[in-house]
Length: 114
Length: 113
Image (cartoon, rainbow over all chains, first blue to last red; front, side):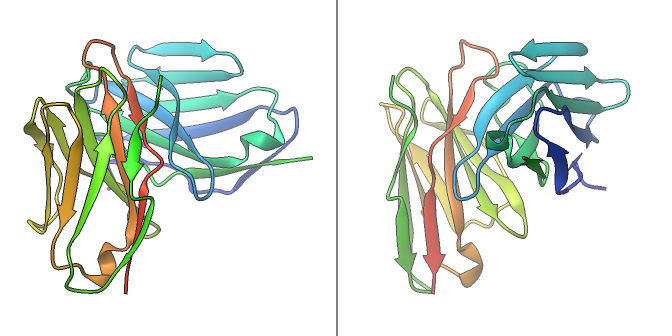
């Protein structure tokens, strides 16, 4: 079993729709959870992090965490073609910067169609 | 505020050679970590440095090494290069005082021929 699992996609959604990206993790001791966006040929860009159960909203993005189910998700509202990218879920054992050993999923490719 | 700076951006090396990659973290960030990204394995953690000390290490052979200087700049070295070392090498910096701030540089694309 992989430590962090994501559906590789591609996930295709029409412009303006909600895109839902999911991630499960195996280490119950994980404390911090990140979503990165990576465009082809570019480096990962931090979108959001979450460490408490529940929802965290930032603009069009909402991260959801359920530690009991070991599940974290990212919702993108009003999806735009510019959101088309690979979304990487990452998990860290630490709450502070001391937990910088991120374990990444393989990423979900999102395609937002006109 | 400048971001994470990595040099060189692109390089081609021959099998058996060694390579050194450099990373300058965001000003004020004292933690630097390195990752390797390949199409087959995805993003994998190499090691992390804080205050010139290696704090975490991933599952890579000893050919991969790194260090951090007193100004928080970091270098990683790969010796005896193999074809499979061809990858995007990413550096990330973090501010210990601010929770969950891990930002990546643009990476160094290494091709081993």
